[in-house]
Image (cartoon, rainbow, N blue to C red; front, top):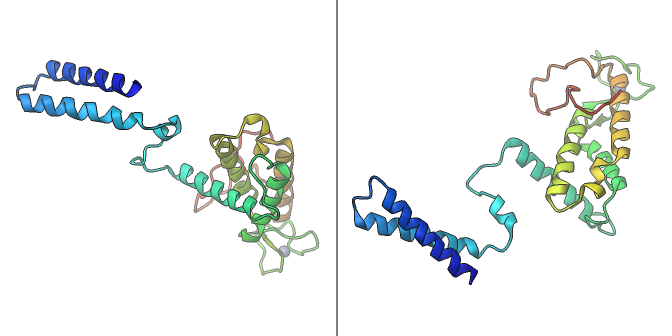
Length: 209
Ligand SMILES: [Zn+2]
């Protein structure tokens, strides 16, 4: 019923368009236009969810969007790999904290331990055995993307574990300890050749003191 009404309506629109078209000299063209326009909504009406309509496969994702998608997949995989696996509805801020700590093993930022002679030195003259970690700015940007992705994937703002105050506190602690260990005050803008992570240079709007 709905389908029929929609198709009829569209056919009318097609005719009107053909009539007002200044280049409607060819009758064949009118018919083709009307037919083409009639076809579309029939296919469209088979869509059951509004969600699909939002996705335009022909439009390439922005860098932010594709990064967000990758992050979301990584996080989902992390939850599934827990024993027992954690469903999204069970996921809380402790899982997020564990995830952020888990990511540290893939970090590329040298963070000196308190006992290291280079602790607090921005450019150490020699290598040291201190661990590589995820830079605060990378984690901060990641949490921002996942916070958005969580709600785009059906989560509610009320249950969003990425928006938890505990995460904010954790990020602030990471930022302060890394600033001390690396001798980098995060207030100072760092020239990042790669310009990889937006918000890494401390321009985050969150009120971190
Ligand atoms: Zn060190």
